[in-house]
Image (cartoon, rainbow, N blue to C red; front, top):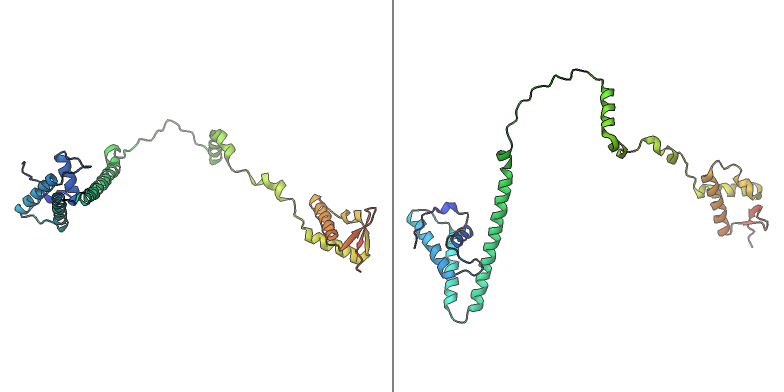
Amino acid sequence: MEKLTFKLDHFEGPLDLLLFLISKHKLNIYDIEIAQLLEQYLSYIDEAQFQNMEVASEFLEMASRLVYMKTISLLPKHEDEEELLKQELTGQLLEYQTCKQVAALLAQQNRSADLFVREPMELEADLTYTLVHSSNELIQAYLTAMGKAQKRMPPPVTAFSDIVKHRVVSVASKIIFVLKRLYKYRQVRFDSLFAESGDRSELVATFLAVLELVKNKRIVVSDDNEKIAFRKTI
């Protein structure tokens, strides 16, 4: 068997070492030969101890785990437990292998600036164009260059003037208005309620106020729909 001469601190943990041994000896990670892997693993531990290197407890714990798995494989009627332990170890190795690959990709991306970006260099000023423009000329040139993009800019405030200037008239205020007229005159012509309306909003609010009062049986409209009066209470 080939003698192992690597140093223990090259591996971040026992899973890292196991992946190295599986790759070096071309073992099947999905069907690990525990006996062969244990032999390689213990040889590495012995070599490390022979070189007076301190072996971390996690490496020794993995060694005992592999010894236990090999023992189970030699005992009769323990096939299920042996397969379960192998699947657990395989899952841990595959997960650790994926993490190493992702870490390598991230490290490569982090080094890309050092590999592909040159040092800043000083550029000489181009004095070919010597004209001087005012700030207004520069702004106008910029807006012209924007072209169609300028159409996507927010609309000016004046675009909303026709919408904002229409006042909102509440129906409640017009109900009060109608009741005050009736308290004063007891009976009024229907069209007189709209004589002082200044815009469409006020007209609509007054009409809705009359309908609301009729619905609540507080006022009545004459049969010819020309006069409005308080409803008589029985």
